[in-house]
Amino acid sequence: MNLIRGIRTGLRHRPLRQASRALREVLFPSLCPACRAAPGPDICDSCLSEWQTVIDPCPYCGAPLGAAVSHTPIICPRCHNTGIGHVRGVQVLGVYRGILAKLIGDAKAGAHNGAVQALAKSMAERIHLPEPHVTIIPLPPNRGRREGPHLATACAKAVARTHQRPLQQALRTTRTAAEQHRLLAHQRQQAVRDLFRCTHNVSESILLIDDILTSGSTLAAAARCLRQAGARRIWACCLARSVDSRDPRPAVDAGTPATPHQ
Image 1 (spheres, rainbow, N blue to C red):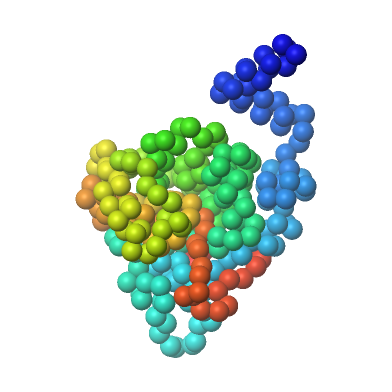
Image 2: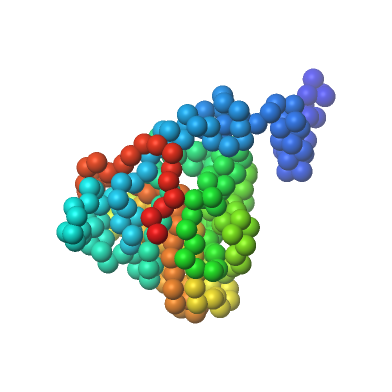
């Protein structure tokens, strides 16, 4: 009994937890982080077939435009082609539902490191990089209480490493903001007002990375801060985009996630 209690106490310490995870990887081979049944560590083909992507995404905000009509200008029902404040364009890898929502939920909860790594690899492989420098929406001040890596940070590091681009971690959060999906539209901008600050000047061209795009308020607040620090061309890439009743039908498609529209 004392031995078991000692082991449990020891596993509360981070180095021992990390060693325990490494041992489990040796004893139990990696599985698909989505279904946890097929061989891993990548997302299996069956789960990829359930990954829903946005149909005809708006290049300015990533929302679905619906079936395009040839030679007819399309006005985005979300942003009306005005985009997200201070952001030139947005890429999204999928829709925040189903398999992708499950993976992001596991990754953000710190419950499954395999989900973090699989999502980061997916972004690095499928992203189109219009700008040379990469930065991220930073973690909030209390993020250190959660286990596991920060999802947006892992994605940004994977993108920078894969494409050999500089990673600038210039943004810092001033407080912990309410989760955007829990707020009404008029509350979201207020929640992120003065949320970010830059610790130093940044390059003129920046690719901003985050996990979920809902209203765009967080991206706009971060981009505004980056612009004040010297950025002039800011693009954004997110793992997932939320869709709702405002979006045209069909809004999503199921299948292997494709390279985002350039």
